[in-house]
Length: 494
Ligand SMILES: Cc1cc2nc3c(=O)[nH]c(=O)nc-3n(C[C@H](O)[C@H](O)[C@H](O)COP(=O)(O)OP(=O)(O)OC[C@H]3O[C@@H](n4cnc5c(N)ncnc54)[C@H](O)[C@@H]3O)c2cc1C
Ligand code: FES
Ligand code: FES
Image (cartoon, rainbow, N blue to C red; front, top):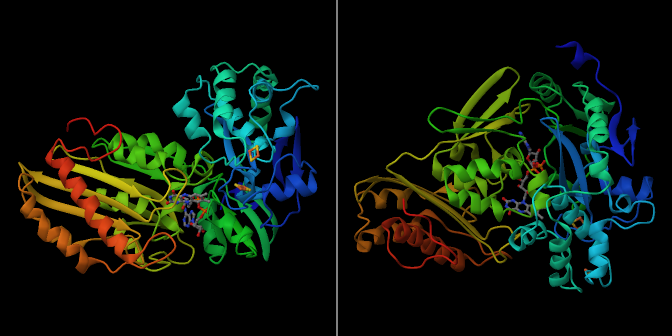
């Protein structure tokens, strides 16, 4: 065990309003919003849904990345207080400068972007992250920026107008003017030491290295592993669960690595956020980019991780079916032992994964597509943005000329786990892209692969119909039929 692991830092540290806040006692289940509203008495940040959906609680976290500041919007209601370690927390109260409104706030006033005002702090903070992104605002970009902010009285047109007026790609506020000093203050917090606040019975820990994480996870196998908290946060706010022992992965060096092998295969460290993984996945196939664009909201993608989306074992998680179809794998580590298995084998049963006590997801691997392979991923949900899938579908077809020589088909929302459609896959072998009649056995076989449930998202009958339709749609597209199968542009010719 390294000296660093033996002597962890005993206080959480983050920047807030130009100073470093150190907290050496806090509940592992405390949220950042609890701290803001109840301890710091900063009540400008609102609590609406308390589950990451409405964006009223949006704050911005500034962190250093390769020596530069980045500003991400996050939902404070489901962000654990300990996750602030090493970051600068910026809230709505911080924006005005000596009584002079921030350019974004002024634009919201000038263009009538607020009525009751409940959503406004969250909306301004989402816009603030875009203001510091370095890019001028576009309508499409702002729609994405605000997909996780609900305004139920003003309407979005004036809000979008305010964003378009104020965000020109050049940040000219006091945060930009003090960027060097802010970056230096964050760099000074980055001590590379493990963090451990509490005692063995109740603690919030944030190991700084893979070795420390592996040791800690073995020592406390029952501890809650916390990544982005976009699932775990709801255990606290909605299920009112206590969390005694929490091991946060957000500071583990190496767990944030993304590597591309010579053959194009991608290895994504478990704590890489969905936001950062998106362009890397999109490079494998545009459908993966589109899937990530529709994953939750910007706030959810900026916090949530690839590892969390796999490790949560959800039957309706988006990445698992998409990556199973691709031929993805999961890399697990327990102590010094590292193993890798096909992603589909990780999901053993409802809420049950092939993960031993003390073991954690270290990385998720996604192969590149070979020249003879075609791929599609399709998410079906009630809303376009910020919605959980009713059915999630992925398919990889291995072609021999116009014949289907191999198929990997995976669905979410159709069974207790993300699952391959083994019978449909077999039935598709030898089918011809030129003859839709030869697809019929595979479409029919889906009924023997799945018996989906009826729940609040969809009925069993709807799910079965959709499952067949998305497979058919993928086959039509891969066959190159000119039929318009999507709203918007079809993929470029493959
Ligand atoms: C508003 C909202 C919208 C959402 N939209 C979507 C959506 O569109 N699609 C979708 O699929 N999901 C969605 N989710 C669910 C969630 O955002 C994702 O599942 C996300 O990827 C979880 O990642 P996380 O890092 O936040 O996980 P956490 O909440 O930190 O953890 C989730 C689970 O995984 C475990 N865990 C995390 N990392 C590891 C690891 N490395 N090793 C072992 N165990 C680990 C935790 O112990 C916990 O059991 C949404 C959630 C919210 C609140
Ligand atoms: S209060 Fe609704 S997202 Fe946090
Ligand atoms: S101004 Fe009332 S909810 Fe947006």
